[in-house]
Image (cartoon, rainbow, N blue to C red; front, side, top):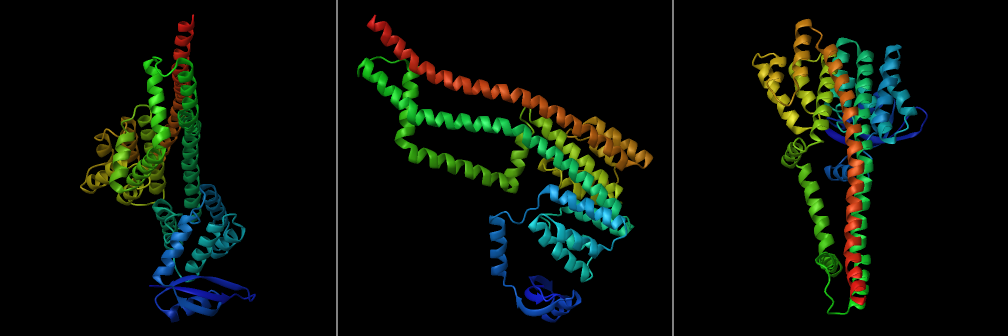
Length: 410
């Protein structure tokens, strides 16, 4: 398949530009004509320009659609399809009224693919940054079973739950992050500007031979190091942070980071509960859509957000493929609490696995809320204590020599 950049006019003689993927030039012209467009210019897109365009959009973050916009689009599409509105007309209406320029651009491309004969699931699969595997597979299952409106409604509900959890985690981390940033800035500010001036005053008062306390000498030494070698220290710190962030984005680094956060007290509990809630709700939604168990496990493993759980679910898929019940496989893995295996066992016996897992997801989402509130109540005073200790340490390093000089004067 080849990408073609085209300029055409619609029925109102308005110019339309875009990119079309077809086997050859003739097929591209035929596809445009089928869409009611009259081609004016049709050029083959070079890989370099496509790559540059992709990089540019990536640089400015134009290829991201906000979760709230995606949820709203999904709910509206479900309502229109359920009311009997034709799919192309529904998508066109959503594209015309979308508040997100990127989503409008994506929907325009989806409409063209659907008009060219593609299924909605296949059309959405071309935009993996917006529509993940869960979304695409559920839409395909809904189209196959003829219950697309019901599936879209489930998708919107699942996205709302996932977005809510993500917002709560971000909200809980916002205050500690601000406090930590203020603490770091205050530390560097004191080391670079305040401590040198105070050291000069103390030295002037006591003379060059004055004996200073060890704490004061230590703080003056740290301050001297920062003021003398700031052009080395700050680039090294920045480079180290950049290298760590780049390493975490690699598959091996991401896996090690996920293993690490599952060992940190206080955080590991929340991470586990979030992963289990994602697993239960996503697996439930796919099962309810009629997707096969192995495909459910494969898709769900990539949506839990933790590579340790992803590997565990892929291993579980292998065991299930060999004939073991999923509940038995889950019960043997310490990453999953006993309640998950028990509820899965009940679902397998009653044939209502999707319904049972919704209960599990609801339970763990409530547990996440409680854990986040508890962690926030601990982090806030801890950060205040850290800031107070830092200020107290600097104050002590200043007051001790001044008190000593006052005693000598007496």
